[in-house]
Length: 456
Image 1 (cartoon, rainbow, N blue to C red):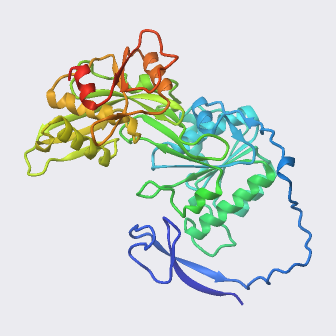
Image 2 (image 1 turned 120 degrees about the vertical axis):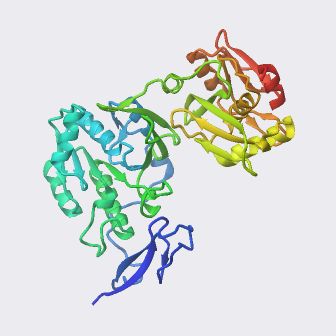
Image 3 (image 1 turned 45 degrees about the vertical axis):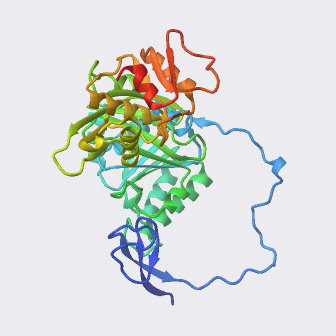
């Protein structure tokens, strides 16, 4: 008879421990160790060299075909961009995000469009009843005769319905609510999430059905459950966005069939998630011209250049230690840039509180946005606005020098498309060949040169 033992496992990283701990010894997360009951099974016999009737056979490298698989067309262009140009049959896609970000809304809209184009789609929900989903579909004005709804949490029952209706695409909302009878654990625990995801992966690979999984996230923003869940799936997407802003960013962090770090931009409206074909114009729509403390950065999200407004405010501090408050930028980059401005440019920023904000709920971490942050801080410090038709880009070193950035041509062309006529950038090693007509490139070797030519 199999023996059961109780262990404790971290829901963030999957580390096991024989006793309950308040903090995971591996990842350092607090209150993530949960009780897991493991059933010990009889050990399998040691492998021998006797022949077996396996169906798999080794292939020579040059014998493997390299023909690209046909992708399923996705009617939402922003979604298709993040997936790498469409859905691959038999792939499994994981979508995570904060509660209320719009994961279920986006997938319900997508499933209806896919059902009208490719055939039967099964939407399985373990959190909402079919009546609740129908009410949301009516609000979104969704009409798809081949879209089937199912409220079920038992994985074996889900597979029975799948075999009966034979869908082209299966959507599971969410993986944390599904459980398998073969695992003696509550839904959402590490062992259940791993087992259900593995069986869904095996089903997708053997049947050719594309599977979407919705996953909850932890307080740290990672997919709830062990990181092995992200290794099982083919594509991992995150739906990001400030809950007080209408824009949502669908970001790819893993994709076996396309480029990573791609991003799709959506706007949450009354009719659901509406794709934004030109995000740069949307982010700059409410920009105040000739206002101090504002600079336009040209950042890259995957292969897409985006123009975002970086705002800064410097205010004399009333406390002993000046504060540094970032919103949408990395705190360490803000500390570095403020130190460079103090040391190399003589700005007495140690007497000022500094607040930096990226408009639209965007989060930018690329070093190419350093110069925009520095120019916005200096503009607020001297209370002098930057030219309204000027965009800036460049990485700042500790000596105040400007360093080159990648994909310069794409950034300059995006700025010209929006209507900017001046681009401040680091000194180039070779000239750009496809500079748009009417755009002036202002090359600078240091942040001091950039401030001087702009007149801040």
